[in-house]
Length: 509
Image (tube, rainbow, N blue to C red; front, top):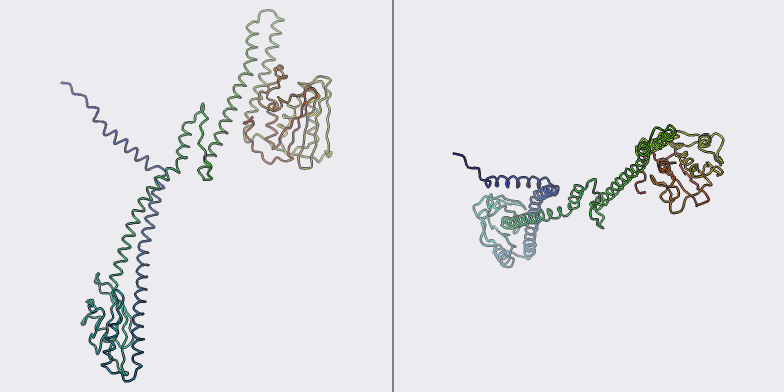
């Protein structure tokens, strides 16, 4: 007999239990849960300290107040007795009468007892009903019977309903002979019980307040942590193909608002870098596709004619040279993003400029001029990467040679300025650059509209590389140009770079 398959419903409780367990584990690991635990611990510590402290302070306050009331009633009796005693011919019977009148006219405060002993016996008390430890025959009463001088004290009865008895006992003299003892006593249990009831009520209220506070803290922490949860959600949603996710910004000045703004700014930089990289790849692919297509087309049409084969080989070699220059420039652009791109050294400015001019004159037949202003013979020095600066200036000079004719003039100049800056310039009398093209002339693979037709003479990276090299030296390039009147490129550099750390190039261009 085949066995029946297990019912699928039997697995549901375990899955639900696993789901609840996972949810609780995730809940316990949340930051706001940890904040709640820390807050609860602080409240418990505060409550554990405050309740005993409150009890001590209340009991201390009760003790001070009770002591004050006892001494106040004592002083009242003694001052009244002294006034009575000053009258002439006071007898013992009149003393009894005085005591009776005093007890009838003066009532003690709550939980206070006024007691008078005459000739060692209880004569009268107010109120009439005395606590057990104060009654005749008790140890405390016997102590009062033996009082011969002012005696304050406290008697612990070990009876919770009575507590401690605070008292003062004064001997009463009549005609120089002690005839009695006046006692003011107080049972502390009543007021201390009221204080303990207040403390219990306070603890109860504090517990309820703590629960409400923890709940509000939980909700508030969740609200405050919402930007961080949104940050995690946004970061999880970001991919290479979608970098448009941003956190909602607020106008507050909190740390979370600052974190939101920092994250959004970081995403802007990352998106700009990815867009720049994507554009660079697209542009590089487009630039490489053209020579490859030309080479492929001519090789497909190649036949056995030696002259045509020679012409085709020359064309192919020319395109391969252009591809090689393009690849070299792309490799240089990649190296520009490395922090160790610059190899700084001390450069003697005059000999450096003369060396570049000598190399430039071999680029093309032009009217070459060298101009150096304010340079001492051998003392002018700057700090920089000699090889990279040479490449930047030669790129500008090569660019000037490409867009000028044999009769045009190209000037290489150098000048040291008073603010510890050095200026190199390349001036030509060629065709110039239109105002519309000038803002993007330093972008990678960018050419002016009139220059775009002459694609075989450059990779479109020369000016971009020159600009990035100058920026790496903490400098900048200025361009002044007008169609038909030539162009002037000025490289303005500090004599010593303020920072050799490379700034991400051309991200926002």
